[in-house]
Image (cartoon, rainbow, N blue to C red; front, side):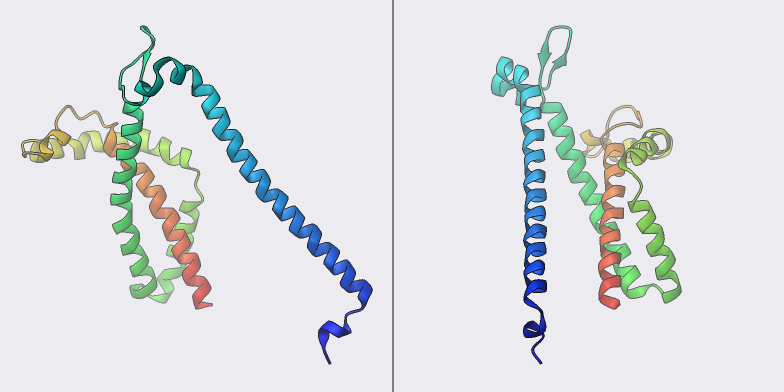
Length: 201
């Protein structure tokens, strides 16, 4: 017996109404997300408009930031964001691939579950917690043990030596790259474990 024909017309009509309502609700939710993103963009443009109107495109090419003389430029924050993001990806991708291959292909069965749960829990930690950890825990370790070694051994090298010269402050591009690299690693590993568990089940 055809199941479609067995459905009563009243029930079929109610089902169609519910489907239209659900489709309309999801469409409205999608439009709301786009409207929120547009509102965020407009808010950013509105907040930055005085600087853009005063400095014009030079605001994006100047690195000076002096509130005393009302001289501002966004080049330094933009450069720092791009460099730390690139270094974070360079640090996170090999580690993520290594952990993923180990968990899915090499790890024993009894070890996959606890490690997977630990990765899921670490991926759920808010990014602000990782930032505080990087500032108060990771930065002093890098300042005392890692950066002096990098300055002594890599500082005299040509070309790349300039990247490792200077006093070991602890806070800088290296520390700022380690923190998002950990976030990227935990997030990618969480997705890998979830997809692997779904395919295995």
